[in-house]
Length: 279
Image 1 (cartoon, rainbow, N blue to C red):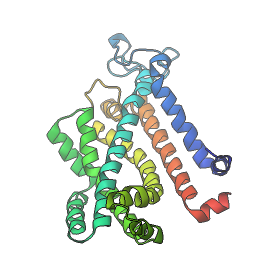
Image 2 (cartoon, rainbow, N blue to C red):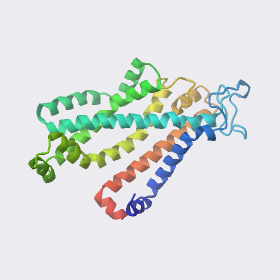
Image 3 (cartoon, rainbow, N blue to C red):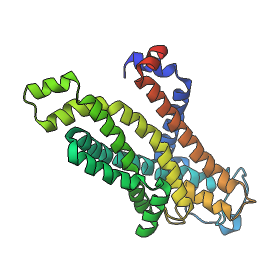
Image 4 (cartoon, one colour):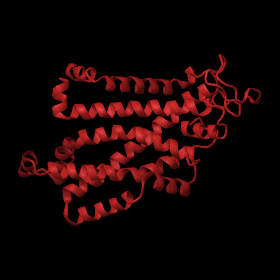
């Protein structure tokens, strides 16, 4: 990472805050086994529904499980799930969009009409339907979200490919006899990466939020799993015990906020006008 880029990031305080919070959650999730004071699945019915104390800083849930440990372990489920959803959606959407934009004609029409079938439904509703059909589990929730997430990337990449493929350097690649595949994947797509990367960064937070929503509705991990959305759902049945929903809710809030800050910062860095101001 160049010194100039670090300087530009340093001039964006919100991006610095976002990177710090995101890095902190990554470290917490990876080191949860050493940081968490208790086993997140260990039950102690005699200590159930206790408020925050010195022994249990975030209190305990309805089965006496330590809430701090469960929140710390929750990052191991929510963060990889969000990354996996956006990563797979980016790959699938990029392939569809790139082929549609580069080939054009009938293939463009067919691929885009197929894409619009998925876009005709709200993401959360279609994801709920697919997750309910597959059955509640982490894997099925991720699959359901990935299935409905890729169309936006396909449309964005298609428009970028269409705008880039008419540039002179693409015509030069054709003139020297480069194959269509090489032109598409080695010449055109590298020039479409920045907008897709910004979109993906912003989408990770949204994916974590919707994954938590599916878990909240019982379409995510099994009930005993230390997942943030599931923990917020458990707190609904005990609304007078505020700590049950507050702490996992704050975890979701901080992660999504941090990723949005990072996405906004990357968008500013990818815009030449904004980058010039930051520099």
